[in-house]
Length: 253
Image 1 (cartoon, helix red, strand yellow):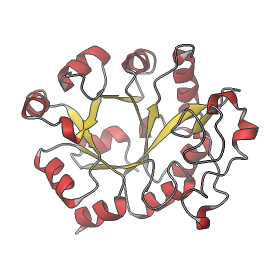
Image 2 (cartoon, one colour):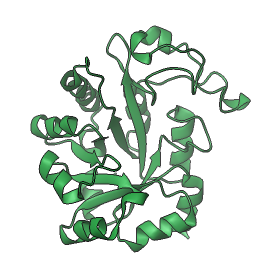
Image 3 (cartoon, one colour):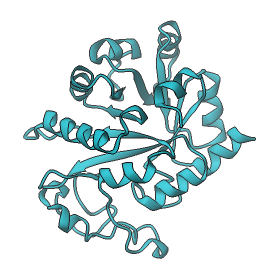
Image 4 (tube, rainbow, N blue to C red):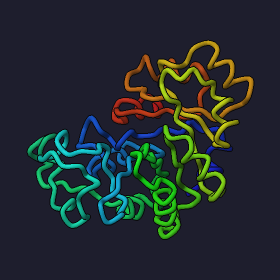
């Protein structure tokens, strides 16, 4: 398997499954990631939260309730309690009993099959975000995925810190919608290798900035034929999708 750098340098389009095949299976679960891999995506994207005992887990929200029962803050629960939660039943009876995986479990599960994009969630005021970045990188290194991972975040200080302390790890600054920042400005501010932004932000000025500065750039989310064609027409390098079952057959045709 190519390293992420080798893949990017080859000029191939990088297709990223947002939280796995999240329209076909409960998001951020092994079932969602396996379905995305079965469709042939190059990279899976996942979100990382932390348990109260500092284990990185694959879960999007700060609180329970949307994808599992309860109303607690996920960060107030130890890993043993988190792993008892059912995050599949909300999606469908066939997914009943699906559990919240740890970051290490997913990295080990995907290793050798696809690249992984890890979204570093914006920290709460009291969080030691540098320690959290350190822990995530430690997990990446433990599994030997240094050359196969891209870390992205709306929290640009985390990206700057990652680039300073761990230059071997791929880093992407995710633009904050409405910020007005150009991709080249985000690269200058953070040192990121790439920029990710919403399709709606791809104005003429933004596209010109990307092309003039030869910026590695991805857009989310391309879930329809029209959205895919729009992104491809701009010559972007990375496409983020919730619907790999729709997008991959179009690209493979």
